[in-house]
Length: 414
Ligand code: HEM
Image 1 (cartoon, rainbow, N blue to C red):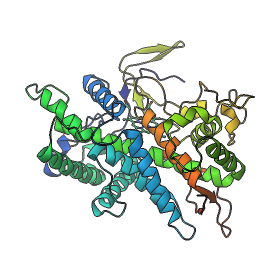
Image 2 (tube, rainbow, N blue to C red):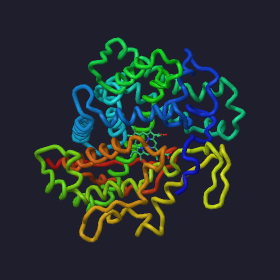
Image 3 (cartoon, helix red, strand yellow):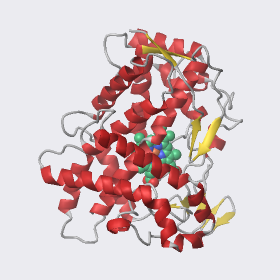
Image 4 (cartoon, protein in one colour):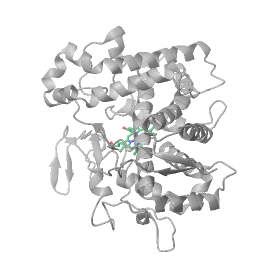
């Protein structure tokens, strides 16, 4: 796969980090929309924000709990929710709550109860922002960039995003009131330390607008992706009960039922690890990654790609390459196992993309996928409800590639 100039983000006419800056927006919020990491242009600000986010996530021993403890805790809450469902149900809403809560725990220092009004407002705003960004109006504006110069039209698309930023602003204000640089509770507190260090330097990228956008990016990039992958995982488990049983056997052998799974278990669990990798390969949730833009003229294999060209990387073509994978279009965990049942890494496994702009949440995402998935299958067995047809494996595409809605029934194992 060729990533061209690998630096800049490409051709969106609207949205944060686009070449266009928002013409208006309530309460001066437009100043805050732009920057961050995901759609930021290649440059010093992106580098600083990315490095800070990576280091902060890596050293996450903030406040009372480690990142692993927070994810494990959330996985337990999610399993309890699953267990409390008396009848068949669609797991999407529950998984969404749990995965977003992990990011809340990182960004705001603590998780929310699932029925907390503030938490539900946050989720509603995210949902609305995602729908607006991938909706028909946004697509028309992207096709006809001139339309992006009409302020009321842009405001209409961006309204949910403005409201979301206003929500995050409230959270930052609350943090500022109780901020203690000697006791860092979360991502926002850590960011405020950076802002304090450079307060005399107006050119620094550590400012409130970037704090808001970077926090926004953790939610935007970290929730839907992990949530969708876990939905694929449960779908494959109900469609392939033999695979589910084998994972459970391995869990019973290595972890048992008395203690919670930990990341230290991964190496002893080649089959489970292979299944999770195959879920990601087959689910292929971001087939075209994010658009990039060459920041200088490039020559690749004799082709000239001029500066400013939008480059779209086709991750799918690698994840489903017929010359590499034995059964590219089937769910086949053996893709990641050798003849002795040992886990094998595959170079063509690139759901997190590659290069300088590759996913910065990969480590967190892998932790979430392993801990949620093993906690599910340690405690529960998942089935297609007897009155339901076999759900389809065909994906729906809208920014991410998701499974269609399906219901499950759970049976407690412990
Ligand atoms: C299964 C889960 C995930 C998958 C499959 C995934 C995949 C990706 C992909 C394909 C990209 C685009 C890379 C490119 O354009 O070449 C990306 C970017 C990004 N992801 Fe993830 N991601 C996941 C979870 C997360 C999580 C949990 C976080 C953080 C909390 C996160 C944060 C980001 C950020 C900030 C970027 C932009 C990086 C940059 O532009 O420098 N992701 N991710």
